[in-house]
Amino acid sequence: MSEKKKDEKPVEDKKCKDSKCCKHEKNGSKDCKNAASKEAKEDFEDKYIRLMAEFQNFKKRNEKEKSAIYKLANEALITELLNVMDSFELALSTGDSKDSEGLLMIQKQFASILEKAGLSKIDSLGEEFDPNRHHAVKTVEEDEGKSGTVAEVLKEGYVLSDKVIRPAMVVVVE
Image (cartoon, rainbow, N blue to C red; front, top):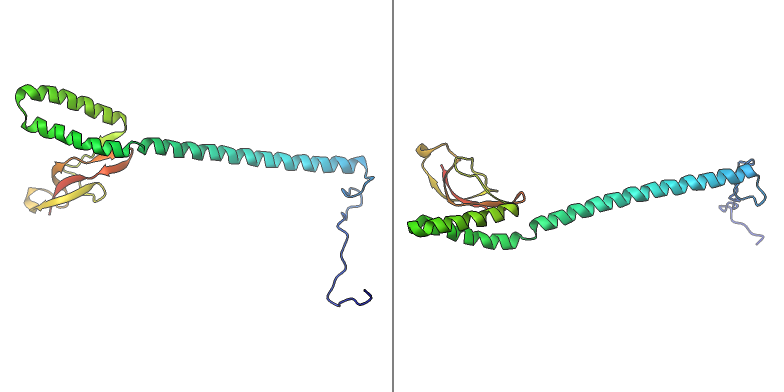
């Protein structure tokens, strides 16, 4: 042990340099103990406030995730029911007058149930073509309307809670 390396530095005692108030002294004054306990209290209060804020953020994030899941939970079912809705519309367009009234009532009731679930039709006719909301099936000459707009809707498109679940099949003006 008599040999010391030149690069080694002596280990310093980690005691406070403030001689008036030192946490490490066993027989410190009351002021020193009060300052230490006050500092510890402030530290715990700060940690508590941060933890509560983090917990509140967690709760908000969790609620947002839940509501998003609830909104889109029935997406697959509603997508399948859209085929039934299309069948109602087809039956109404080709059906007898005596059956049409009953079918129309059922179709309206069915549509109102789907609307309560957050489903809405995409308004397409006369609107500018939007590839996110429309599926172009056919194009027509420009003299029938403004270029780039929807001239005819072949199959209705639907939105569920701001998400397109079925784009509208449309005819677009060239």
